[in-house]
Image (cartoon, rainbow, N blue to C red; front, side, top):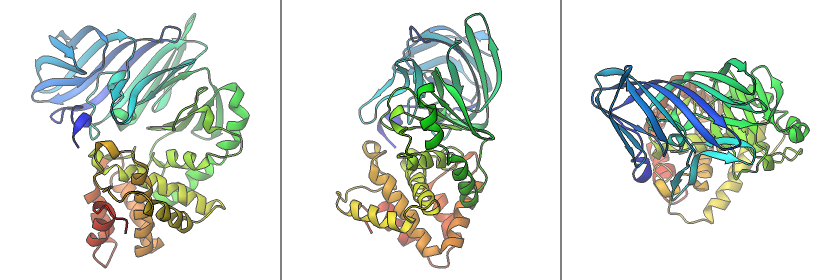
Length: 415
């Protein structure tokens, strides 16, 4: 993948763990951070970081010389195996501005903040190796004004309230790509749905959210049957008091706007879509952004599977409708490598889902869902490629599948 994606991350670098200590002032929007990274490299250490004032940089406890500009923090230190890099920084977080995807990363809300990191927004709030295949564990500590709730990836392991602030500490033990790291801050009430499942929601939306997300525990149960065990310890949904164009995916949590809560389950397909990403995109991550259909096609097909199993139209009906719509659109996109401009084109989502439905029709339900469960198990908390999926599907098929996948993924004309 070229363009802005190629400018982020260092393929020669691997981060084992991030320890982030953040202090956020809701009234001013100011963020102060202390980040410690356990970095493996045999060469110069280069990290992605936005426009912050740098207070100090240490490597293995000793001051390090560095340069900072154009979104890169370059240390004049040659790594030898594992080094612990500490960066202290502060300022008003600035989004990563992109031509094709708008502003990404840390975003100030009317009352609070959110992170929308996909695909390259992580450097807007912490120093990182912003490479999709570089997964690490995380500890995220957020201190903010006490009326606010801070939500981050993983499990809440500590909370301390002072005279006017509260510190929230989360641990994400399962490896996570930087773009999936997230912090959500707002005046939220906690709505329990099931063990390990909560919705954080403004008080005015509590009743509507209880109805709209009320069937999420049944979704989890269905997806565990179809895809395998839920891959994380908890799952949280945040509903902001602001409207959002689309929901936001993060590891172990999803974020919806107030406009996605109507009290009539009018956006339930999106609830299923974001939940499915916990298997496809978060646990089984991408080794390369060109394979984005492995995230979005699978999550879109999960919408159809939920519909099929909850009294709505079958996946076959959804597939027929999607095929008819796609047939009327330009036939100029190869979803197996859509390019930077079309990375999040709706045709990637719908044709990806159609590819899976066509595979299901070819293999039969028993073999198809075995493929999905094997996929989730074989690459749990790791990364994978389209070639990996094709090989797995072929293992479950007597007939050769290479022409099938070539037609669906690498030819622009819709089969």
